[in-house]
Image (cartoon, rainbow, N blue to C red; front, side, top):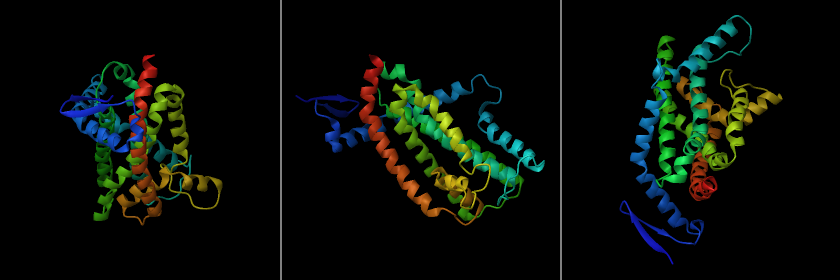
Length: 289
C-alpha cells in the first residue's frame, strides 16, 4: 500500500509500482528534485572551486594555459614549416585559441557527469539528497570555465584586432548547444561508468581520437577523401564550427546540421536525465552490496 512521506514541503509517494509506468509522476519528481537541489549544488560548486585551486600559485589561470600553449606550439610549428595547415579565416593563433577553448569546454561537458557520480560513490550510498545537485554543480563548473576562457578569447581578438559583428554575439548562446550535447553524452554514460570503470578509462581515449577528427587546429577539410568525410560526419564538427563562424562573421557552412544536433542534444539530455533518475537507485544498491 502506498504511503506518503513529506519532506521539505514536498509530498513524495513511494509505491512498489515502477515509476517508469507513471511518466507524469516521474517528471514531477524530477522537477521537484531539480528545484530542491539548487542550494546544495551551489555549495558543492563553491567547495570544488576552492579545493581545486587551494594549493596552486596560478589559480584559475590553469583554465586558459592549455589553449595558449597549444596555440604557441602549433603557430611555431606552422611558421617553421614543420607542419602545414590550410589557410584559416582568422590569424592562426586566434583560430587555435578559440577552437581549443570550445573543444576543452566540450570535453569537460562529457566528463562532468561521469566524474560527478564516480567521485561521489561513497556519499551516494550513505546519504539521501537530491542527486541532481551533483549534475547542476558540474554543469555550472563547465560554464564557469567557459566564461574564463571567453575572457582569453576576447583578449586575443583585441590583440589581433579581429572585428566582431553584432551577429558574432550569437556565438555565446550558440556555445550552449555544444555543451548540452556533450553533457547529454556524459550523462548517458554516467550510470554505466559508475559500475564499469572501463567507460571512465576509455572516455579520454575516445575523446583524444575524436580530437583529430574535429577541425580544432585545422579548418574543415573539403573533398571526397576518407578523412574529410570522417571529419564532416563527426557530430561535434558542425557544433564547433558554427560557433566559430558566428564569432568571426563567416557564412555558416553547417547551419542545418547545427540546428538538428542542437535538438538532438536537448532531447538526449532529457532522455539521459530520465535514465539517470531511474537507474541511480539500482546503481547505488550495487555499490552498497
